[in-house]
Length: 279
Image (cartoon, rainbow, N blue to C red; front, side, top):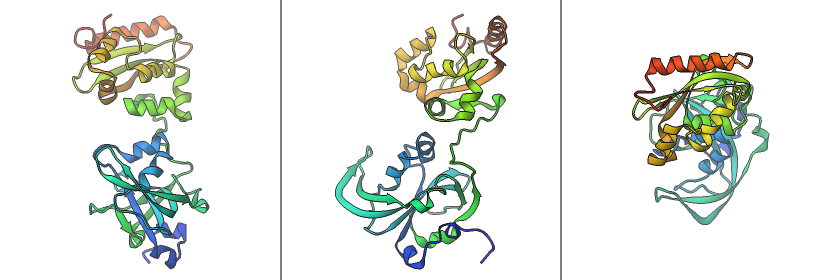
């Protein structure tokens, strides 16, 4: 014993249970980052965990971990494989997986999405036997299910399109409460070209509502951004745009002052001449 708290100190799996346990390390597959899927909806990651081109066996226990970066892993499921079906799942990259029927083990439900583990994975093998459990050190037990989107303060907001969409569409009260009644001057950056767009949120549309329009159509009604979406498609926005707050104001600040600050930042970034601002 090294005195460090390990995963099975929390789970308490017996030797018999460990003998039929598999640990799945869910990590970036070249197309999708599973921790981003978890942020959108933890349920999405269950299908990921119980899909594999190496089939589970009936009666096995599956421990699902998702890579958070920096050698940290989040426990998001412990389940039992009830049946392996003769129904392959076709993925977009042409690799077939095996469909299974499983049940989540309810006695661990208070741990799902909250237990952060430390483990430096030095192999490419992501479907592991239970002996790995002795290397999974508990670093933290979060007070609530991990969202990845606790509001960092107005000076530290810098979001990709996908992150912004997740926040707008999801249940993230710290972000929603911070943006809902806030006026602001904000910046959109096209990371593919470096071109910028400066905008403002005023009494007509507070920041949460204003940014929601970009999530829904990519352009928010702005002339140059409409042209960009028409030329390159909405996916271009999704892949390349970043959203940042330049200045934030409470709802009582006069709109005229905010519009003057918007004009100031357009001059600073020369976004009328070199970016996506027309006026």
